Image (cartoon, rainbow, N blue to C red; front, top):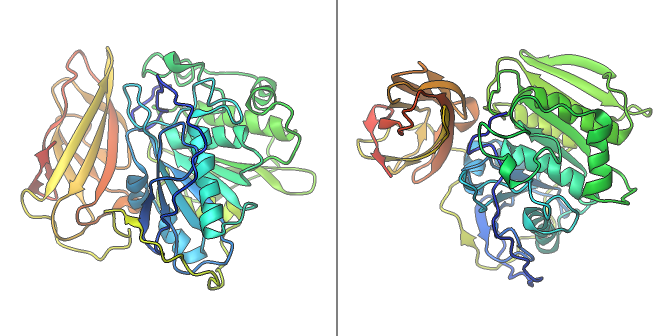
Length: 449
């Protein structure tokens, strides 16, 4: 399967085995996204942002929500529905930012030997440090910790459930791959990956043995429940890998490959459930008809939170937020009023291209540099001659050649003042790997960074 920058794992050429660092407590004020600059052992050199809702119980659940390659924690905060769900149901959301690079940029490490082992190092250790920080600083419940993510973040979700089964209660992976799908750093470049090349096919036993024998040998405790999502038209992370993930987790749980039930919760969502003898659904798989590399879209985050069991309204907290000065993020709350389009020059687009012999992926960061929020957007740009879009994420794209218009999806329609969102696409080309040009947001010309 092909990989795009938003999709994969970060490539760590140097792993820093940092010693345990006592955290400096810089808690978030409720209902704002705040960066924590020191949260403990951080061999992956990651950044941590946390969202703590106003209304929460004394011991709230924790959801760690992970972006795709080329993204960031604040961008995933503003471009997904998890923070608004946290406001409704009273759980904490951690938004990590991967910083390891391998030509793709900001991808979560699911390929290195260190990352594949319990307490081995790299990004998984950093992520667990963030979870433990939330438990120490906010009284978060250690029995209610959940992982979710998109693309590279979806890959890391499956990875963390395998490597740290004692930490996580459940996970929801959007457009991910099974644990141990990538052989190493050389297995990541688009067009050459064995994992994402479209032909990965192992037996359920082989996938299950990887979890049992490699991730955490000797572990005999309970396993986290697993929810996996994939679009049937995804060509970046092939849809076929959904089945490989199902086979891995059903084998780990000792379940049949035949679902115990199947249904269509809403149009285009085909769901298969795999329950154990007590009737508990341990594995749940969603096939989203016609969807490309664009998940989660509207309503999917809510389905993940429901799978976690977090959809009861919390009682008011009895533990007020500590009165310590935070380091606030510049990204405001995602709930924004409708506004007019930005004035000319009030937008900026940053373009990052990763090309190979017959194709490339382009990741675009759209920044609203105006004083007012934008609610509902379209971005027009010019695609270089000979390039054709084959798939995209976080937007719809039409037409696929020439002057293209990218339009928002339901979950990322709002761009706050001074806020950013990330979108991207994959193209085929005959040798012209130039970047797209001439951007206009809602009819206003954008500067290009």
